[in-house]
Length: 263
Ligand SMILES: NC(=O)C1=CN([C@@H]2O[C@H](COP(=O)(O)OP(=O)(O)OC[C@H]3O[C@@H](n4cnc5c(N)ncnc54)[C@H](O)[C@@H]3O)[C@@H](O)[C@H]2O)C=CC1
Ligand SMILES: O=C(O)[C@@H]1CCC=N1
Image: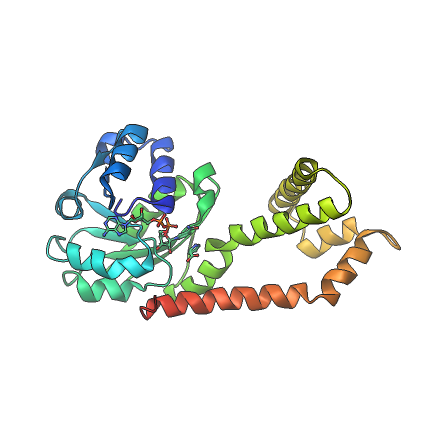
C-alpha cells in the first residue's frame, strides 16, 4: 500500500479483517510518525516506496491524484513489468501509468469509498491494456474483502467516482441538513441525529433487500393528503432532484479534470 492515508488505511484494515496476514503487507507513508502508527496499529511493515516497488507482488497506490505524478516518477525505475499496479486515485486513467512505467505493466484502476472501514465499500474496477482476467481477479479479491465490487469499462470510471466514490458524502450532507431541520422543529440535536440516522439505515436496508423500486418504496410512505407529500412538494419546488443531477455531473467533471493534471 503506497501512500497509506484515509483510503489506504481503510483498505489495509479491511484486508487484515478479511484474513490477509500483516506479515505479507508492506506500507509506505510520507511521514515517519505515520509509518510508526501503521506498524503499531496493524503489525504491517513500513518500507520506502522504492523498496515496495522492488519487492511487493502488487502495488496499491492510494495517494491523492495531485501526488501521483511524483510517486510514479519515484517508482518507475524500480517496478518490474510483471508487477500488478492498482491505482485507487480519482480521475487518473490506466494509460497514465502505462505511459510512465515499464512497457507491458498491468494496471488496474479501482474507485472505492470510505465505507470500506465497515466492510460496506462499493469498489468499481477497470483493467488497463495489459491487465488480464487474473489481474482483475486479484483486485476483486482485495477489494471484495471490504465490500461489493463491480467491473465496468474504464470509460465509466468518472461517473462511478461521482456516484459511489463521493456518494457517502452526499448522504452525510443530507443527514446533517435533516438534523438541522429537526432542531428547527424543536428536537434536541442528539435525538434528531438518531432519528434521521435510523431512518437512513432503515431506508438503505429496504433499498437493498426489498427488491422494490425506489419509487414504490417512496409511494408506500406517501399517504394521500398526508405529511410526506407536503415535504416532497417542497423538495421538488426547491429543485432538489435537479440539484443532485447537477452535483453529480460536477463531480464527474472534476474527476475528468484530475486526469489532465489540474491540481
Ligand atoms: N477519501 C475518499 O472517500 C476516497 C478517496 N479516493 C482516492 O484515494 C486517494 C487517497 O485519498 P485519501 O485517502 O482521502 O487521501 P489522504 O491524504 O488521506 O491519503 C493520501 C496519503 O498519501 C500520502 N502520500 C502522498 N504522497 C506520498 C508519497 N510520495 N509516498 C508515500 N506516501 C505519500 C500522504 O501523506 C497521505 O497520508 C485519492 O487518490 C482519492 O482520489 C478514492 C475513493 C474514495
Ligand atoms: O473527493 C475526492 O476527490 C475523493 C474521490 C472520491 C471520493 N473522495
